[in-house]
Amino acid sequence: MTGGPLIAILGPTAVGKTALAVALAQALDTDIVSGDSMLVYRGFDIGTAKPSAVERGGVAHALIDICDPSEPFSVSDFQRLATERIAAIQARRRIPVLAGGTGLYVKALLEGYVFSEAKEDTAYRREMEALAEEKGRAYVHDLLAAADPEAAARIPESNLRRVIRALEVCRGGRETISRAKAGGLVYDALVIGLRRERRSLYERIDKRVDAMMAAGLVDEVRGLLAAGVSRDAPAMKGIGYKEMAAHLAGETTLDEAVAAVKRATRRFAKRQFTWYRSMPYIRWLDVDGVPLSELREKVLREAAGFFPEMTN
Image (cartoon, rainbow, N blue to C red; front, side):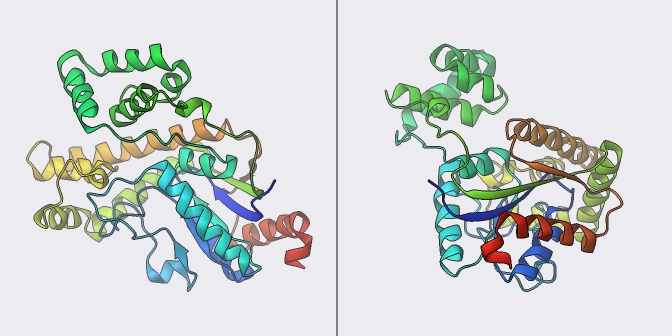
């Protein structure tokens, strides 16, 4: 069973996904569905590298600016909304373009993960948070390893929120997250991965962070905090925001904060590749030194072979 045609553009942060996705959407007269978990938040623009109106090139982008900063946004929320938007685009006889960013989100969508319906248990969550505070995150992660080894292997100890959520699901006596998956792709998807030589990618990351600083990232974070956005809000946990919030609180110098953002972004890029290794259907393209126009034509040729009835 297929969810219909779809083109997905994946790759690490700062590799050039947005520009290619827009060029493809313009050529195919279609829309883009964002696969980035941070672009959903209103007011979080500079630090998320949210594409501007000019960068969007007149192409409609779904799942951008749909949440307030304090709202939690889960992978199951993304899967549901993205599925709806993709179906609406396909109903117009167009091939949606998914501009991917967050590995779990994209994988869950493409492979049709089925998530437990276990409801959040606030009291239990607070109990686990207190336990982590008292005995350390490793202790809580060990509880998950005992209850669901597969989930524990996938969820890092540092991501306490996801560790506790996985424990909640186990405690509910329902399907665990790790076992609630469908195998294979549920879309007739052409999945393109963009990659660059590591030094080249890291240079692009550093330049992007420098550009964010020049564009006013500190002022953006200052304005969000002044507007009442808590440092504990889900959106404030994003790279760039937590570091600048720490700087504004006097916990680090500006230079230290900038260095921390660059370091965290490079680590994020590495984690993205970890997700991609579990997605063997990705068709990788090396993009160093390749003009955007040439890259666009190459992907369009791939699409013509993949979806002949819709691209000819």
